[in-house]
Length: 322
Figure (tube, rainbow, N blue to C red):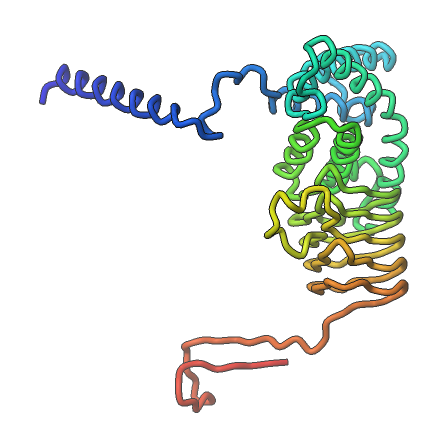
């Protein structure tokens, strides 16, 4: 087959594929939605807003270093104006998912989006108060931490907590979609999955962090420390949408430490204050205050197919327990 024939076949094949997929788009499924693409909130814009909010929350750490001189007032004014404009536009796009505004006109939606934007930015000093306590808890709780700079610039836990605290305020103001996009961005970047609906007190410290899951209705008190692989989850989600707005996740009271790999499940489960939950514990019932939970006499089982003179067994498998 000559080159011209190959080119013609390629064009025909491409046209056939396009036609086939366009026909598939006409089936009316959720994945077929395409007409209002430009009215959807933009993940890229929201991530850019997060980056600018980080510069506002930590003014000396994430500022634009291309400028040789730095005036805090001018820099902050520019950031606030940018975030106000862009966040307002994104909330307008998101509010169409708000059932309470389903029948409201465009002007009413824009006014509500503006009110939320201004209220959110006015809450930043309060958010920073919580984040300051998280930073202090990280330095006090981790002997490997050299200073605050290291924690702010390098610790994934603080990044995930910061984004969550910002997203949580938008969640409380019933902004659809945007808070979840924010926390899922932090999840993809850090491996720490905290739902924006979770309520978290002062001095929250995440050590290492990878694999942590904190569910929507979780309540965490003050001075709580959790390690990698911890799940604060639901006992079951088989009820699906019937469980929406139902308390599904545990309460962790003040001064609790939860070590790596522990799972604490259920909306009625309360971990009492001053408790310590050991690694790999699986808890579905409440724990009284001051309790230490640990797992003892775990059996390690080894299996292999290499025989030795000392292994006079009937088959090629041996076991060893401690």
